[in-house]
Image (cartoon, rainbow, N blue to C red; front, side, top):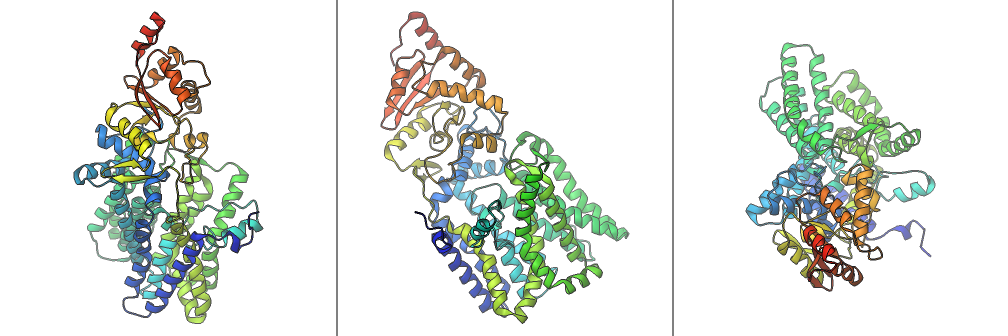
Length: 589
């Protein structure tokens, strides 16, 4: 019987989180009164990400994100396409921001380094950029190095002690209907092969540049240029971060415009143009990838009261620590607000706007949680101010709170070194290779001996990452291990492929007719319907079981090309099928 006690629920990830949080807290205690306090704290927050990535290769290169993103980059590398297709829905455009994929694929062709390795390097640098931008934002609120150091830590590790922390499970046991979004820890996004890291870093740099414009009298033309570059980067790489950027810069423009001075209005106009022009240029791109979970193409309003209540409860626990510290520090915060300090006003407006967006907006896959991620760089400096004051009066209690705030991020990192899959792979040069020599032989045949634009009917998801060929449809979506592929097929198709259900189910039916050995031999009409979906593309089938291979051997149009212990590869020819049906015989393989 499973141990349901609190300590019984702890595993390697939790112990890792406790040790890491304690170590970073100790570093902060030692350096907080030193001249290099900020640099040492930033380093303590940064180093765990690349260090853990070095020991988490299976998590980085084999998990859901690694396989999916690599499959797309392989198309760009092998087929020379600019706009990739959905690897699990051949012939359909990839409905996910793909500019980063294109850049990393082209860089891989030049350097010979695997595109996922290049991606992880870029994401690690993006995390360092986020920390540096967060430190700059905090410096606009306070010159105290301790405040800046605390704000930097909180910007990376999050502002909630509940989400993904040690208190999450006891809390959900106490409130069974409670749903806590586990992805609201910024650290979870970095070295995790996704579109978010570079977008979040661009948003934070843009916010820092906007606050620089807001708080200085002199006009610096470099700031609008930097904001324009960040806007373009966020809009192309991660449109939801671009939406957060719009909130930050919209707030800056509003506060500048309210001053009603000519110079301020000019600077407000410069920022507005720096955001508007790149944004308008990216609209065709956004339309091409929508609807997508990581774009602005599929969005609506939270209409269900049940969903709104769940999100409200989730938000309440997310913001609880901030609310507590703000309440304790309320006299100082009220004074600053009454005096209309521009930075505190800007951060408060941003927090209110993004909080409202989280509650009101509904996106695919509950992806509106990214609005919570985007408000953290605004909330962290305010929390740091309050926590700094508590450190003077109650140091032990304050350090204990800091420790608890660091645990969720440590727990997200702690899952990675112990992450296991049942179909492991390795990187060799620019590509994935299966560690099973039999499977590797089959997928190397697919990658090197079949046409690059071939479409495969296969019963699992390994063909796109290991064979570098697109699937007609994901037939058996769950991977065979705890690697992120363990999603129900319909959830996977709705979560990422995002085609109308009628189209997906129709393809699913056709593929099942072909791949199920219990069905009668697939008629030519079935294969003709598949060919109409992917006109001009060579069709191949991966028969995983001997009974299925025997079925194809007896069916006109299918020709066996390769066989080993991992299955058989068949090509399909409509002309050969017609000849076989006409003659009543099966052409020799």
